[in-house]
Image (cartoon, rainbow over all chains, first blue to last red; front, top):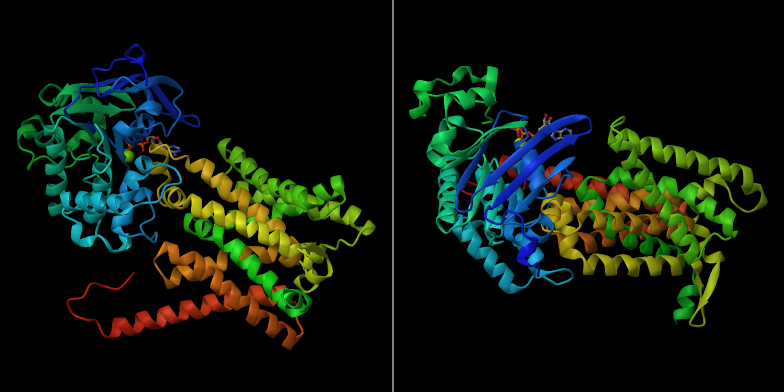
Amino acid sequence: MAGSADLHEPGFALHVEDLTVRYGSSIALWDIDLDVPPGRLVAIVGPNGSGKSTLLKSVMGLLRPVAGHIRIFGEPISRARSRVAYVHQRAEVDWDFPATVLEVVTMGLYRRIGWLRPVRKAHRQAALEALAEVGMEAFATRQIGQLSGGQQQRVFIARALIQQADLVLLDEPLAGVDAVSEDIILSLLRSLRDRGKSVVVVHHDLSTVRRRFDWMVLLNRRLIAQGEMRDVYTPANLKAAYGGQMAVFDAADADDPARSGRVGGQV
Amino acid sequence: MLAALFDSIPAMIVLTGVLVGAAAALPGVFLVLRGNAMLTDAISHSIVFGVIMVWLLTRELSGPVQLIGAGLTGVLTVALTEALTRTGLVKTDAAIGLVFSMLFATGILLIGIFARQVHLHADTILLGEIGFVWMRTTPVLGVAVPVSMVMLGVVLVLNLVFVVLFWKELKLATFDPALAAALGLAPAALHYTLLTLTSVTAVAAFDAVGPVLFIAFVIVPPATALLMTRRLALIVPLAAALSTIACVSGYFLAVHWNVAIGGMMATMTGVLFVMVLSMRALKRQLQHRRPVPGNPAPWP
Ligand SMILES: Nc1ncnc2c1ncn2[C@@H]1O[C@H](COP(=O)(O)OP(=O)(O)OP(=O)(O)O)[C@@H](O)[C@H]1O
Ligand SMILES: [Mg+2]
């Protein structure tokens, strides 16, 4: 066990310092400093290609940064793997893979089950319970290729829930999702937050972000702003993040999401 | 009785084919699911280079040293490909093509230069000669068993142990490598091990079917099995069963038509694939004509 002397910024669910990430010669993230307090529902917002997915992948240790460091509850990812769950974009896997919904949810337990040990009945039971939480228990034996986009996303969320992590990272969980799934997912994320978990969500829809999240990180390769939603969600900040793409946004619309358009969104 | 089996040349030829099929299907299922089928192509071509290099160093074509030495060429192929891709100068598929054709060409050149001294022929090297596997035997428990069969048997057990032990890790690393990495389950190490086993299997199958026909055994039966079932645990035995059918029917057809046995066996894996594919297409057409109201659409 690591002594508390090893911890760096343990007061934050997520602490990012001087982070620079690049792919080949193109820089995706430049000198990011970020602190996410625990128990928040956080939105990461920015235009397409602004490095949102890159940020989450760096946090999970899937990319090697050029510079900087990241801590989860004060620990590097190598020591915090069991405290953090990650839901990547839906399109990153092949949904034709021969597996049932239950099998995919059980995958969230593979770390806890451990190397060389088989999946047992208790694990499948836990997966069924996670499926019930996302309203998908009736689909347990179905092939994953036979699900709608919203149902696929709920399966992924169940797979993250089963990990019982303290920090949950989700990459565009609401993209291309039907209204029913969206409601289920949002209320689940809220209940996670209400139980003291920290939830960080990449979100693409500026018109809804204000109502749904309480902390916001604005990104465009550099960090534009971070903090309480009401402090960060300002026309000046949004303009700084979106620049020329901001045609649809108007300060008067800020309180009326129905009238403001989707910016930089993928539907 | 066992000795009688090993005295029967046809039985040994078919059994060798069955061993190739079963040993190849184990890594094959995961490679096909990952979309890495062409990497198999690259690996099995490159080991020509490995086999001739190991032969130059040891003057032996089979044995544990040869198995591992030549098998490492497959890994070298993958490592070189990835290094080349990482430079950002070429795309992955181009890198694969560059590396394996270079190694393969070098291997063929070396065979041309040195093979006159021994019984190596480019044809045999490429396609193997399953019809002659019975000529080189080694005693196992007092029975003369073809060397090829012993090597394939060892590799089959190796592959089986690996796939059974790491079943769930392989499944996750194949379906969702990002989650596997996030959970700390070393998908890259697993993938490399899988590729190493594939090249070792290719080396073991070298005498029997050669690298070109080997590809058919890695890719086609798993791809066929995938069309027949959606249960991963069934796909592996099903692929092995398909290989067996292809080997038995391929042997008799080859004898009947007096054509190359290994080639006919590989052809039969393709014939089975086309049969399963047309059966599925037919089934789907029938289902389309009579939609059952209220039922969810059948897969896919
Ligand atoms: N694997 C990769 N190789 C090279 N460049 C990449 C790779 N992944 C992302 N990029 C580039 O890095 C930048 C940031 O990408 P990233 O996917 O993090 O953006 P994003 O904010 O998630 O965008 P989106 O809203 O479209 O999902 C983009 O310019 C993208 O083209
Ligand atoms: Mg993204």
